[in-house]
Image 1 (tube, rainbow, N blue to C red):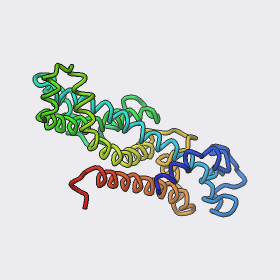
Image 2: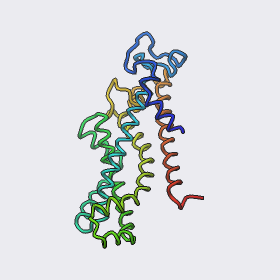
Image 3: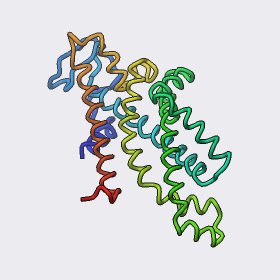
Image 4: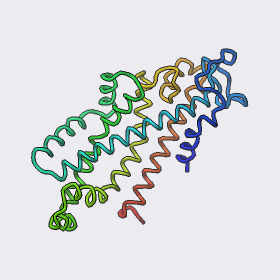
Amino acid sequence: MVLAFILAAVGLAPVLAPYDPIALNTNEVLALPGARHLMGTDDLGRDVFSRILYGGLLSLSVGVMAVSIAGVSGTLLGLIAGYYNGWIEQVIMRITDVMLAFPGILLAMLVVATLGPSLTNIMIALAFSRAPAYARLVRGSVLAMKQNLFVEAAVVRGCTHNRILFRHILPNVMVPILVVASLDVGVAIIVGASLSFLGLGAQPPTPEWGRMLSDARRFLRVAPWLSMFPGLAIMLTVLAANLVGDGLRTALDPRLRV
């Protein structure tokens, strides 16, 4: 319910935002939250509430797109590694092991530092850093699924490898993928905001939650709302995404049902 409300709010940002998120107003610099500006204004007179809405649209888009790319690419690699034995599996899994040896945020920072600071590059970096986890998860599920009788029956019937992979095995390994992906959205939002906070993501004047937190550091004493509202937005969104992930895991995993 909370996540649906957040998605609706940021999705309707052009309608709900009372001001242009990048419009300057030097007459209302660092204005306190009130009726005119629900969350106050920043050091350039920009409405914080409007910037929160538009920034949420960017942060959520980066998180969802990064997890989608990581999930699709990692799933394909995991299917191939789990189904085909020999050198293909060894190459994929050894590369995966090397990538998993690095902390996710460090690997993402390395990719962004190589490609340059931008939200698009953050999305690519997040997908690159998370794909190995999906590859390992799917490979393990495929190895177990290959032992089932319905896979052996499909082989006896002469089904092609692609049909066996995508019509028989993939639908049966989707549950753990969906659960991990729902939990990963929150992780991607935090890492994306962290990279923007470090100056590797959104560049001024683009409204983005991590960037807003970075810009608010100089005004913690005189204008604490500048950091409070973006921080609350990140916290509530990540908490809501994690609750959805826990709910999916409970609903789809029969071992957790009471």
